[in-house]
Image 1 (tube, one colour):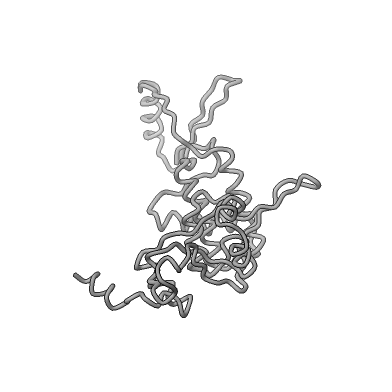
Image 2 (tube, rainbow, N blue to C red; image 1 turned 30 degrees about the horizontal axis):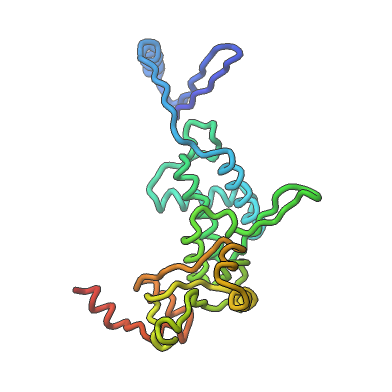
Amino acid sequence: MHELETDTENNTCTLKISDNLKPNQIIKLKKFLQNCKWIIKTVPTLSLEQMKLTHILLKELGELIGYDSHDIRVLLQNDFCKRRGIEYFSLSPNKLNAATKEIATDFITFIIEWAIQNGYNLILHEGYGEKRTLRSAREVVPEIRRYVLACLTAKACAVCGTYHNVELHHYDSVNSIGGYEHCDGLKTRFMSLCREHHSLYHSIEQKEFENRFHIEGVWLNPNLVLILKKIYSGHFQAFDENKYKLEGEQ
């Protein structure tokens, strides 16, 4: 383990190393540091905003599950790193092993997707007293398309996050493809909505819906249609599962 600490007031740099190193190894390292050429290189570490958002998400999720923010962070971060084959990282921008902006963005998305897939509706509480605000995961997720897809596969409302009375919504008119019996899931966009927001969509203009919630339907590929057919019975009537499998085997 190596960790560098700087003290600008005393003009010193302290290198923390493992106490398992032998004395001759420490002497060798000291000589190397004295004679080597130092290069200062900036790296795109996570922003303070990303750090704050990550901690808020973990706190809210931990409270829903019954974990403290540290325990849920360790649980999810271990899973995240294992799936991506990367080293454990810090969520503090000032640490040497701080996450990059890209990793932080992916981890934020991972937390939100994990919550959706496990049945937790994340509502973020920010501020205190009269300045306290509530925001849904939809409003902070870095990649809205991935969020909509996660809601579709978890049968959660993409607007409010509820899991009650959620329906598959054809985001584009099925009349343009000849009706529901001609829907194979590949010719229009989709979204999952609770009955309240499904009714709202049909009572206002599509553009108004998009502007109000900053969200829109997503296109599906055959693999997604195969998954969603099992979740939303009666839909995708024109999807030929056998034909797709035959095409995939060719």
